[in-house]
Length: 261
Image: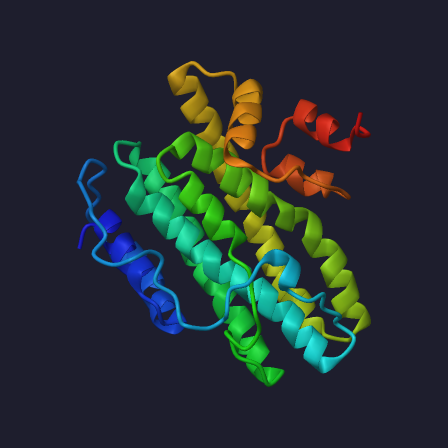
């Protein structure tokens, strides 16, 4: 099957382990047609009946210092990674007419997100928990829907805004899990952080490529897109080293670090 069509098929799968398997099989897909016209045959994304999706304010705060709290915390991370599989698959199939390197980059993201979800789901099982056992929210996919008609907005507001927040949040979470004695979870989050630097870099690279193609100023256009689509304002503390490694410019990092006016 052609790569973009296969990505759409994987995106449509509801059962998490089957979606992971289909995603990990994508690199064996030889053909790529950037211009093929694709139409979903079912509502997107495919996902299981659980977890129950609630408003972000209704998701309880989680502590890693009890087994139940640690399971709930890591379940939230697993939910982010499951959504990240869907986001990468959507980036492959939805937007035609881009360079082949764009689709290959997002294929790398999709396969790594599938690996992350598997690591977390397997670790959750050791804590007596399965994906779907806790409520979750749908913030990542909501932004995916808001940017469905604009690939530049997608690159600006999903990888380099929402997913970049993970670069900031992961080290403090690792420190708390280490205090709780869960070294396996600390190692898993280390793998995720390493790979997510690359994923955010891909978002940065293609956002800037698209802005250059269309004659747009990346900084001014980002502000316009963030306002248009209701993107959250990034809040510190920021992992400036990881953000720099992911391709944020010195001016962007300075703006993040500056005190609010």
